[in-house]
Length: 390
Image (cartoon, rainbow, N blue to C red):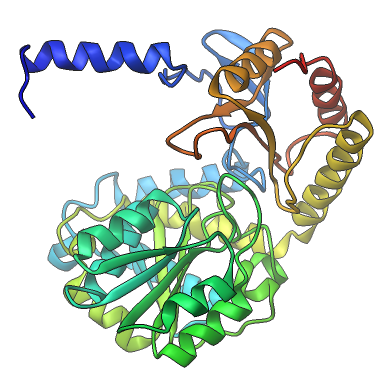
């Protein structure tokens, strides 16, 4: 492509185009810990846009574990896990995650993004085909492209559509979100597991938004459907959402985990997370598993919200998770709604293309066990005041 202006001017032109299309993004400065009562850009707001679903990000026991961990281990891990960064704290967390998920082994990654890139590129390559849900998280799509396998996308949550696509060629992997991050709905995991078995393929489930929230003791989407761990299913989970800390893990068979240690570049060539963080996560994992009241409270708040939204005639998607999208349509309208809520003292993010498809801009409302019933009612009252003209 020939440019008649210097590259730096080209950047400015593109930024201006984003602004004109209501697609420009700005960071807000948070001035309080993660909790419903936020202070954003110096102003107190009631927040409905965190992924801290169980309210553990600011839990005193988790904070204390992090502090004790820092006293015992210092801060930095010093190196990658395979050099000398793999501490006893990391090891204990991997064992706890394996026990929690029911898989033989678990392996820590620095982020969910890196975990997905690492798994897909380690297991698939040129000549293989990876099938992914159209609405999968960006990291799953990027992982397939990085692996150089052929990426084929099937219609959202459509196992029959996937079945038709699977008829041709060599399938290496089927990859899906467990709970879809922008819609809050669930993948048809029993059907996908069956198709993966038939095709002799891996099933990779990114359960970033399901773990902690769904299933017995918060064991996630697979458990929610009564699916037990098996050798063809790979579970990716993040630690920065329901578990309130940071990082990610992959759970699977002994041979799978050993293969990732040898071959997953995003595991091998990056510094291990701080050991103190692993200690904090072990504390939050115990709380998440033990305190069922957090999940019960979340379900109660979601039901209260959906019932109220129904009375006001608000257009929600079919979600039973803490992710409750309110469809706006245009990016301009989503931004307008978000600004109107902010003026009323409520923080809800507007989700626009390219995160969602054109014409599917929305408010992404998320709930936490730390919200009060009065918070939900206040949100509903504010939503009822939104302008409904297009």
